[in-house]
Structures are given as C-alpha cells and as structure tokens.
Length: 203
Image (spheres, rainbow, N blue to C red):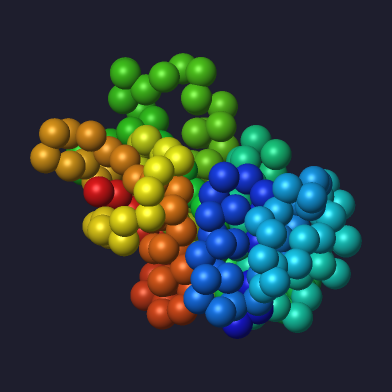
C-alpha cells in the first residue's frame, strides 16, 4: 500500500514510517523538516505543513491511506478532514491522545483532579478532535489512542488493545512504546477492525 504520514518526522511518525517500510509498504513522510525523516528506500520525504491545505491535498492524493501524526495544538480537525476529503484518499488514521480515555464509566482521564494542568491545552484539543471525527460519516477514519506514558522504547510486539477505556498493567501503570504503538496502528492499516471508531493500545 501507499501510505502518507502527515507529521512523518515526529516520534510517532518515524516509528510508523519504519514499521510500514519494514512490512513492504511505500511511505510518504510529510513534514516541515523532511530531512528528519527515517532513511529507507521505501520512504519518500516531502515538505508539507498543515497550515497549507492546498499543498497538503496534492501531497497525499493518490495514496491508499493517510495517517495524521501531528500535535493537536497545531491542527484543526475540520481543515484536516477536508484535506483528506478533497484528496480522495479512502482511509484516515489519527495518532490520538490518552486524555479522552475513560478511567470509569463516563469519566474521561482529562476530567480527573490529578490530570496535569500543563497538558490540558493539548489534551483538550485531542479530545475535541475525536469528538469532531465522531460526527464524520463520509470518511473511513480511525483514532488510535496510546496509553498515558507514550515513550521511546523497545519493539516487543506484546501489547493489548482496548476501545474507550484506559488500559493499565497489573501495577496500575498505563504505558506503550512508540514502536509497539506503531505495530498496532499498522496492523489496523493492513487489517481494518475499527472503522469510524477509536481504539487504544497498552501493555
């Protein structure tokens, strides 16, 4: 498949690029600094910016899947969805956040007293992005939430999937490495199971 990654040089974007290339897919890594893209014969780096939607439409047109792996504070969901819509790319996956995951029925993590205030602006934008997607019915989207601690670590291939509830291990820690998260996201690209849904990945 041909997969375009908007934000292809960030930590998530790089791991997703590498995982796709490892599996034989063709990747277009789109970023403001394309020179930071993973170096691989299957990865083409292209300059692009979410603030220039017309150029972004041109960059992703012709791909089978587009992945958005950019900070929510840098994006507008309506604009990005419209870019995908105009491009004609049939599938759209979003690297999401953990803050909208539920810690109890109807209680998202972001609403708990212990949620760090310094993360509220980005987390709120991430939740708003998911809320917006849930009203989109003309694009095949999937929002993939990591666990709370999203870290640079090993590619183990051992993780669990969930839906809207926060995943935690036996010690109560909620975590996933970027490398293992990338496996789960690329699995979803290859074998779709969460059309117009959110799912989460954790240990």
